[in-house]
Image (tube, rainbow, N blue to C red; front, side, top):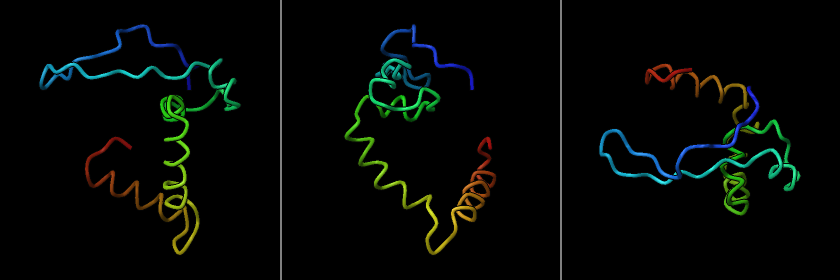
Length: 92
């Protein structure tokens, strides 16, 4: 993954279907990640959720059980996710 570069565009962008301006949340920079004690090789999801750490914490509490081993292994869950994406013509 290329290093994160701070956004240099406006804080809104237009939805091409409706021309309605949509808010743009800047991603955290490497310095901001380091301040929070998070790795600088974090993906965009972490950089975005980092703007609201409490929301990120609660989202992780909800999401982690979905990907962790349980009654169904995490490997099988991922295979199922990939198959669903394939059936829906999503880029995999």
